[in-house]
Length: 381
Ligand code: PHE
Image 1: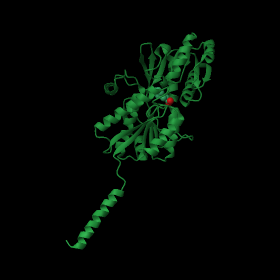
Image 2 (image 1 turned 30 degrees about the horizontal axis):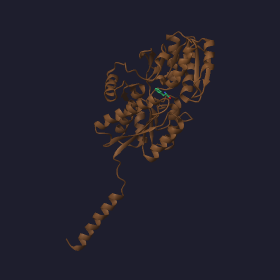
Image 3 (image 1 turned 60 degrees about the vertical axis):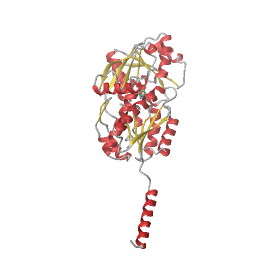
C-alpha cells in the first residue's frame, strides 16, 4: 500500500469512529413508568399496583424483554392527588424520557396525567389500570385522547351495577348517598348510582357532601339516621369508608352499606362494613385458570393474595407490552393505534377497546363479613 492510501484508510477509520461516537446510542432498556400512591391514606392501592406491574415486567424480561430490550421500571409515588401526579408525570417524561406510563390508580390523579400525556401530541402513551372516571380517556369535547387508555370499566357502568343490585337483589326502595364533592371518582360514582337507582324506581332520600380529610361525620349521619334508608351508599376509598361506617354503626344506623371498587383493600374495616357489598373488577376466587394461575404466581412472589389493583396493574402492563410487541416499535402513537384494534386476553377478562378507549368487561359484586370478603355475583354489560 502506498503512503497516500494508508493516510486515506486512517482518515476513514478516524471518521468512522467520530461518527459512531456522535450518533446517539440506541437505548439499552425500554423504560416504563409506574405512577401510583405509595404513601398516604390509600397506600395499599399503590403497593398492589406497583407489585402487579412489576410481576408482568419480570415475566416479560424472563422471556427476553421487548423489542430486544429489557423492560426497566421507573416507579414514582404520585399520591393519588392531582399535583404530585402531575409532577411525577412531568418528571418521568422530561427527565427519564419515558414513553409509556402505567397509572395512576385514582381518577383524580389520572386526569391531570392524561392531560400532560395528551399535550405531548402522541409521544407518550398512558394506560391507567384502575381509574374509572370517564374523563380520564376523553377530552372536554368528548373525543378520545389518542394515546390514553384504561384497563378497567367506567363508573357509569359500575354505578348502574350497584344500583341494580340494591333494587333487585336487596329489594331496596330508598338510599342515602354521602360523598366528597372534590373527588372526581367519588362524585362521579355517586351521581351514576343515584341516576340508575332513581331510573329503576328507587328514591335517594339523603344526598350529603363532606370534604376530604373530615373525621367527624355525625352531622350528616344524623340525617341518614332520621331518614332510615334501606341502603347507605359510600362511594369513597377504604380509609374514609372505615371512618363513616364505624360512626354509622355507633349511631345505630341499620341501612345496608354499599360502595365501589374504592373499598378494595386489605385495610378495609370488615367489622365496620360487615353485611355490606361493593362492586369490583375481579375476584381472586374466580375459578378460571387464567385467574388461578395469576393468583399462584403473585402469591409465590409476594406472599399475599392479589387484590383488584394488583390484577389490573398486571393486566395493564400485559396489554401495553403485547401492543408494543405487535406494533414492533416503541413509537407511542403507533402502539396506541395497535392497542385500539387489539384483542387482549388478560386476568380480568377478554378485552377490546371502544372508541373512547374503555374496555368492555364485566363487574363482580363482593360481600363483606367480619372474617372475609367473598364473591357474590358477576354482572356483564
Ligand atoms: N376507581 C378508583 C378511581 O378511579 C380507583 C380504585 C380502583 C380504587 C380499584 C380501588 C380499586 O379513583
